[in-house]
Image 1 (cartoon, rainbow, N blue to C red):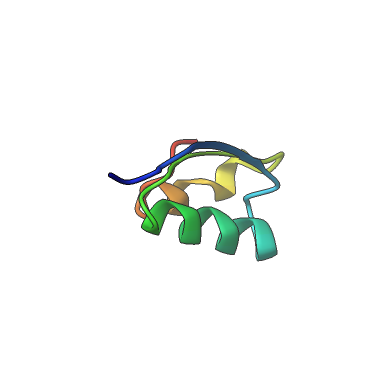
Image 2 (cartoon, helix red, strand yellow):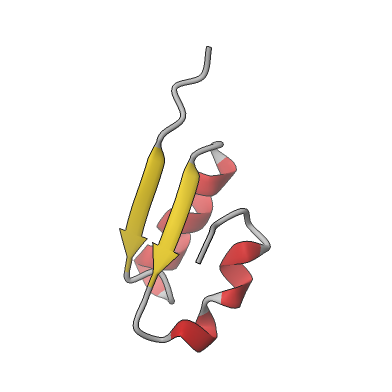
Length: 51
């Protein structure tokens, strides 16, 4: 049984926040990514994050 979590991650538009959101989504967690720069959030969806 997997122990996947639901995660709300802020600051996900770039840098560490972006990398963290992608890594957690790739591990099978449900990631809700948030940021002030919403126009930069679309690439997260291709990695399985919700924005």
